[in-house]
Length: 203
Image 1 (cartoon, rainbow, N blue to C red):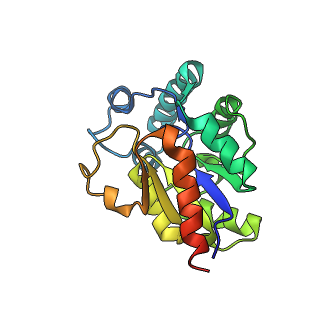
Image 2 (image 1 turned 90 degrees about the horizontal axis):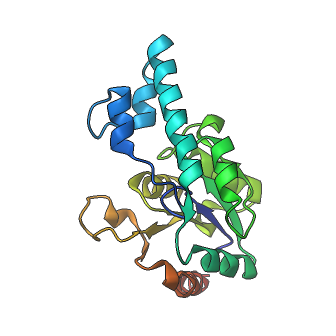
């Protein structure tokens, strides 16, 4: 079955907000390497409100310092020229995502933030988007830079594309969840063409 759409993660994949997750954990007094959203979700009352305000301050700073990764605009314009649908699923707040997405040359629909439903690695948002697009999950690519993106893609039944962003391939146990790996954003157009051709062969 042919690929008909791409669901992108935003921060760390298309846009670099330079968020310091270790500093976030320090400011919130969270354990090292704890998943931030999931940990804060377990809190209640003033403790949770305090953490949410700290997170929001960091994200606002991220909007102010955000830049687009080199090579990304050309990849997105190529995907648009091929008629592919494009959406965003982010663990960021929707309002901040919409601000940063204005830096990119294409339109994404829908854009799903963390307040809209279960966050990645839960596949909810991916399945919702496929439903909105009236396609099957295996007709979509889930593209992102971190394990949550790849896990969500696998849970949903999508093809997974990992943007390594100069990480050492194979250095983490989740790298094997990627069906395809983009090592250089400037080669994104070629890799996308390869993925589409591979899936045409399967029809």
